[in-house]
Image (cartoon, rainbow, N blue to C red; front, side, top):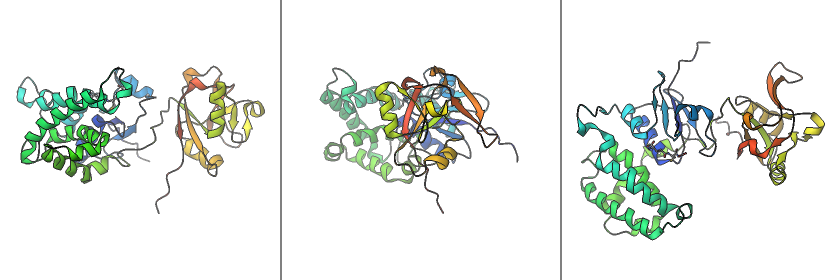
Length: 325
Ligand SMILES: N[C@@H](CCC(=O)N[C@@H](CS)C(=O)NCC(=O)O)C(=O)O
């Protein structure tokens, strides 16, 4: 079999507006996940070690090029994908990062949007104040959209960069957005985006998945949801595999990133509520050994002791995607 050529790697998060703008740019540039780059959907609650190793801030999106270059800002990814000029020294007007509307979007608009959407996450945030601040900015943008798009009568990188954030405002309070006077141009602009094929494409597989990418540096365990609930209540998990305890087997069965589906098919396919636990080996107290299963030469991770709840980075519902005939 011919060796696979190295491809850029995109770390992304389905709902993140910065990641959406990066995926849109890659789509518009004619690139696709699985072909032109590898897509790694990330859980922001458990960022994979590979992402943490690439950037201290470890935000998504992040694009790692095959020569090791790391693009850790969504606008850099857009510049790269759309081959936008990015030479600040040559021409200030070509520097997308400095565009006043982008600066306003990524700065004050995003600041107020977050506090308007999630006032509970920001102690002391006055939702009405932040809503009014975002509405004032939207009103300004509406004036710019008289020609249809932010930079004229054709869509540009700036529209793709800003639209995912305005979409979030719409999702936060659809009734108010739809009734608001003075936002007619902006509503038409957003509606075209929300109903267009580009957004639909980048929000669905293969561009966006609901399950996180599995790092080969972690190990995985399939658990019945009620057994995991019991473990959380007492601080440690003591099941080995379906129907057998740690005491009966002597270790807890686990899988490597590439083995989860096969394990699921063998033991859990008919179970009702199955969770995939993502385990961080560095947080285990007991020894972890890769050992051959009794009837095969394939090595599996075995944990020789109870699993502390704190070693589980993620617990997500798991099932296999239906097979498309
Ligand atoms: N300036 C960055 C911002 C990216 C960003 O903040 N992404 C969020 C998700 S929407 C994130 O990764 N948050 C996780 C964190 O900050 O730890 C960009 O444009 O790419």
